[in-house]
Length: 285
Image 1 (tube, one colour):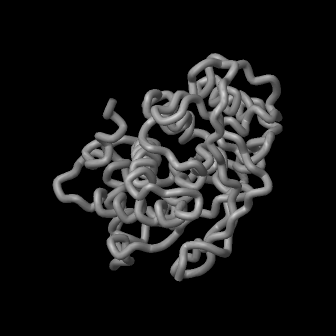
Image 2 (cartoon, rainbow, N blue to C red):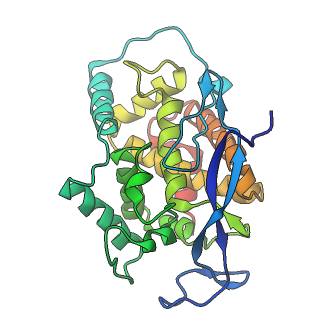
């Protein structure tokens, strides 16, 4: 089946023009490019899972939740007490919904803006400015409905731990980019959801060997999920560029990214999440 039809997202077009904030969107090909949400450009594509239809995130990009062969179900295994505790703490994070009435949540969102655009003041928590980051409207809370507060935490971790890679992806500074690019922030929410599905983190214990292996990483580093998120985001962009993809191929790129992550998690003799081969992408200059 083709990877289109059944979902929708708002494409983001690179438009050449000067910006008041300077050369922060500098591109090697044709000058400065802000991200403009083209509201009338809605494109359909398929994101069917093996066991049902894909989940919708926000108002647009639908998550790819296809069970790869490397992550196939396997006989039950027992978790160690340490793994159970780490999984429970991660699941507690996953259960927190983004709530605009909670000051800490609003502060976290404002903090993300400051990390993304330190040179520009955010005028209001609901603002057209958010579209510059790749949200689909002026209120990011509507996009968080699918990913929850953990998806914001993932973006914040990425911005703080790997600021250069974060900025490169946000501002599309690396590679020969497509005219129609994926929206950065909403793509990030999709990645959070994809990882949760890939690892089977909503279950009492992961149903696959990929999820079991990840819990070993988590038990030695409780930031393993956040680090894996950063790896996945950078890998997704790397695949995007390698495939010379545009908006209609987003679903295909996400599937390819998931398969590669599953393969790397299963590499023998890996003890830490940082040992994954694609971790090096975050360190490249």
